Image 1 (tube, rainbow, N blue to C red):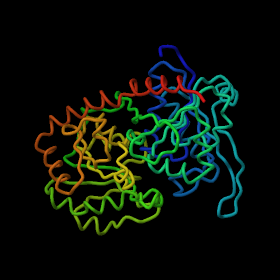
Image 2: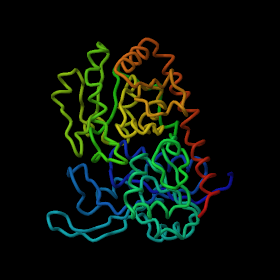
Image 3: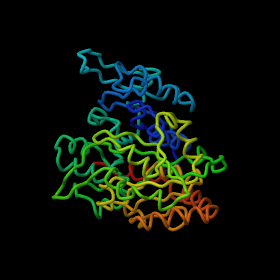
Image 4: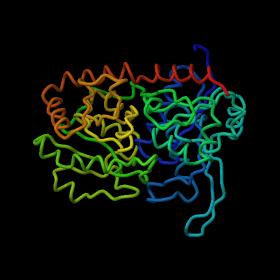
Amino acid sequence: MNFKLRIIVAGLIAQYPIGGVTWDYLQYVLGLARLGHDVYYLEDSGQWPYNPIEGGLGKDGKYNASYLSDIMERFDLSENWAYHFPGGELPSGDVFPGHWYCHSEKRRVDFIESADLLINVSSGIGEPVTYRKIPHLAYVDTDPVFTQIKVLNDSGFREHIDTHDVHFSYGECISDSGPATGHQWHPIRKPIVLSEWHPSAARRDIFTTVMNWTSYKDVTYSGKNYGQKDSEFMRFVDLPDRVSPTVLEIALGGGNTRQAPREQLIKKGWQLVEPMNVCPDLDSYRDYIESSKAEWTVAKHGYVVGQVGWFSGRTACYLAAGRPVVVQDTGFSSVLPVGEGILKFRTMDEAADAIREVAANYSQHSNVARDIAGEYFDSDKLLSKLIETAMDNTN
């Protein structure tokens, strides 16, 4: 598709103004702009925002809007963003009215009126029916299995999903192995703007990752439990002793439903750092990845049980930076090459062997990592395919 479109990307940059989340959605915006499209970033999730400076809920959305404004201005998109602070009452009893933050109200309204396509990533638009005047609405599921179970258990969320014309999922095998919702889930990967990631950056001799211990409660469907990262991680808690003297470091968030046992992990040899100290924003997050030798990480238990082919967008950034990855198998080997650059594991022995292999043959794995990023995660390729599929599908 060679002609210029007006495209709205909806995400959660202002909702969670931290480095990794920013890259998750910003690369859609930058990638579409690289392709020559007129792209506008809009956030209307209906969720009360997180303020990392205050360590909790943002009181009026000003910090969140300012963060988003600075990001967009940095990439010459200062006129092409809008953030809706939903307003409401805080637990303290303070009430704040809803408010649109944007460079220009006229620009926001005009863009919505004239847009060809809205790409709703992770429900960055909470009420898509209010944007139904846009001829093509696409939904991108970034949390496979959990999204499909919610569709089946929550009629309101099903209506939310049904409002879109076409549906994509980071679970590339979800149609074969995931709970059937009656939708066609087109496979997609996290688009990476390769020019933003630098294989030549100086690195430490340390394997790293960035993770939350838990993100939300486990869910059960058809008698099967779908859990968080904590339950998978504890299967590999003794790994540092197995691969010594290789150092394993985690920028570890404490957990929203269960707290990480930090003292136990440190005793087991894990090197722990605070994410808000080492990678709180766009640049420090990229620096943290690029300064790593490689990534080692587990996946959410639900992805492992479901074997839906999920592959982390963060891990794709490691690949783009020429950093090999040793990652837990979620079924992605049916759609991505493994063995060099990407090394998968299921067991403790496989994890230890893969780390030793990367350490012993680093240059080869590093070169292949960047090649894989170029072949399988390049935003030019992935977003062109997304647009083609979205524009060909309507209700």
